[in-house]
Image (cartoon, rainbow, N blue to C red; front, side):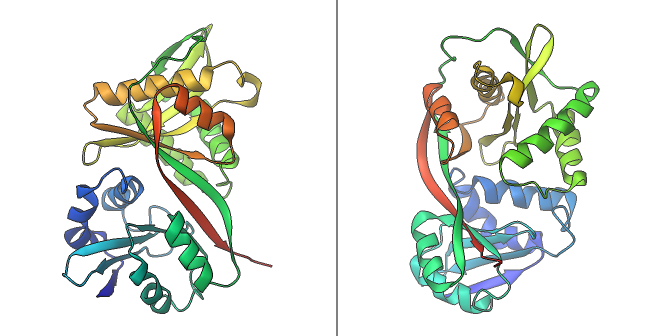
Length: 280
């Protein structure tokens, strides 16, 4: 039983890719992050090299992965408890690990081994059951965002980053998300009276799954059902494109968004915890 590490996404996917694709709901973020590295290069997320690892169990099969793209927290998926100690030792007892995103049980094991780390966010993964339109339905309609919306989209994706604790997201990455999303037609706007009032995006379909993301309503338009409407519209577009599973994450500290997702047909799957090293 051992960890293997590389900074080469092709090497990582050759070994760990099949295990990720076999359970795409659980591995949705790892799949989309490594796909971006494969398409856009090792430094898509920042100047530092990525760190990609996989754990092989006693039977030799891949039984857990690590995907780290600084400055983002390291993402652990499907890691068995016995792999936690060797991982901490391999990474220098936390000396070079400033953040970790893991399922709740593994996060607790990590926190016990990493003094000075604290929980900074708890998220719930949802999967779509039967899509239900918002009730009451808000005024307006959905439309696909285009390049003509670029300035507004950049502003709103920046607002989304600020609202979700990602205020340090580089301008180049925000612009990439907008340009790539409009090129794919995966950014949906909800309009009321011809004015855009809410946004939702979608990841590429990978292993039959699509994740709804970038759900954002500017403060002046909140409380009117636009967020629910644009999320439902984006979810419907994913289904119409052939997705077998439609997913999204919600911050557990935001009961409003969690309630919205439940009302339009999303069902809880699992909770994840993000730990960060206390800088004090």
